[in-house]
Amino acid sequence: MKTPGQALVEQLNEALPPGVVWTKIERVTLGRIEVLADRLDALGKRADAAIADPDTSASKVSMLANVAPQYEVSMHALIKSLDPTMEVQAKSARHRDAAMKRWHGSAS
Image 1 (cartoon, rainbow, N blue to C red):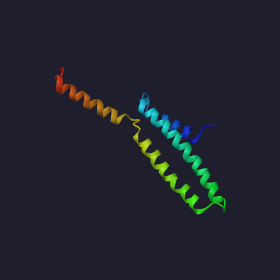
Image 2: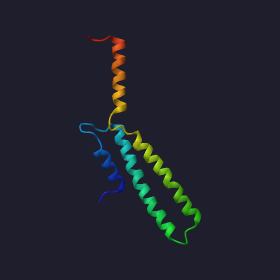
Image 3: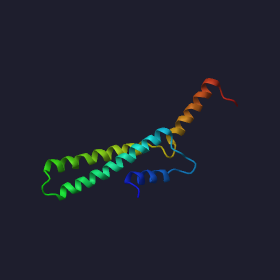
Image 4: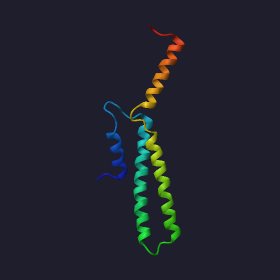
């Protein structure tokens, strides 16, 4: 059975257009996303258990509830940093080609 992090990374991999692969940096980012998703799942389970237990202090419940959004924001930022459509890389390639033409002249 897959962990929530593995399932999320699999979904992100499936969202890649045909012929596109992740860069090395993006593969590292996917690893961090997987870890964060697994931690968020574990945190949610602990928070649910703490809320269900009447002996759990309000401060502990509050702490668990406050950490989850921080994980969610971090995970969202990491997912947003991925470039599955290669828009950022394509722009960089265009800029590099334009610079080469400026420095070396066009071949036409």
